[in-house]
Image (cartoon, each protein chain N blue to C red):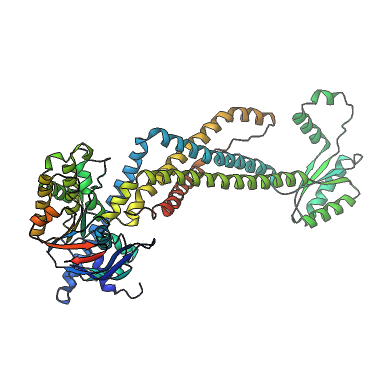
Length: 345
Length: 218
């Protein structure tokens, strides 16, 4: 087709003969241009009009077959709500671990025999070190007080005649590199006042690797469920194309372009994606409402001021956006495969 | 308007539907295309509609060689042709009005314009009062006239008909033919494939006769 004359193609694309057609003769050049502009505007308007009416009709068509449409929507909503819920769970875990993450600390348990003034002096000395960002002294009394408060063993402790707890100096290193952290821990451990230097990292490390694993699992499951959304939409659109075969053939015979024929099916995919995602959003929010009370009770046992994270505005929009995109893409897949095969006989 | 130059069509199964067919139809001319069933009438119409492509030779419409048209050009080509089928191909999920309006929606006319043109077309075939009905409730003759209204609603340059009177009794057939003659009087080029030789012989028009894919008279 490389030898096609461009003039021919141009003529081919003109509006029907009785519509105003651009006059391209040199004598009427500017008039021709004006007409052409009007034509373009009219064409654009009719394009918009067709989009609007197609969008409306595709939506109406969903309600013509309420049961199948509802079943498809329910499947889509569940397939979208599951990753949505997992995502919220992840968000909460991230939020929770964020409170602990902070910077690694080293707890220096001082010799039990060290007098309080010596402990005070030692913490002053630590403050002078250039490799520490912060130093906090927890005296024996403070330690005991805190232990009583948190553990609930206050009654038991009253039976002890001597405070069994050492004074602790909690330091926050400047350099958070793993190697330098353990070197620092070694060095601090050597100090005569220090009985034991403990790096509070294991717990943080475990939590963060657990979060990484959970992230990965959610990603994989989310991808699988997204794929199932694609397949469900694709299959539904395929059936819809099949049932409108006659209409497609007639439309093609009277001059419908491929995109004109495709449009209603793409919009059907759009509506499935949008409505499915909105229902999924409702599922997620209702589930969160249902579990928020027990979660609150559980959390209150740990005395943290943790608040259950919901989807929020941005994530809600993302959920709906993902639903719409999957719907459109699923429809496009089905349309691309099946519409070309339907030609007038 | 319609020009065939040594056109042959061989289907993939090896069947030769048309062999070396040459003829031309002037702008505003009306002609019949006759022959036994299987003589190649439908294939000839399909080549004009670009539902099939010629294996050899050249088909041109309004001076344009159809072989030059890519897949994307086909819809625009079809918009200047009106087609009437024996099985009328109406859609029973919508009203008579919507059936006739389909080509106009596809070509992007605005609503107001569509209303006027559809009613004008329905008026021409005498079914203006049935625009709101579902075509399934109409008689065969009426359905055929709806099919004709749909074929002429966008005022095509060329009107093709494939056995338009196939299921109709002689009186109705005459009526349909009179409609075609009327459109022809308004300047439309008309080509009607039919095996109703008795009807053809009563009409003062040129007749192209196909026999086993060859044009033996025309």
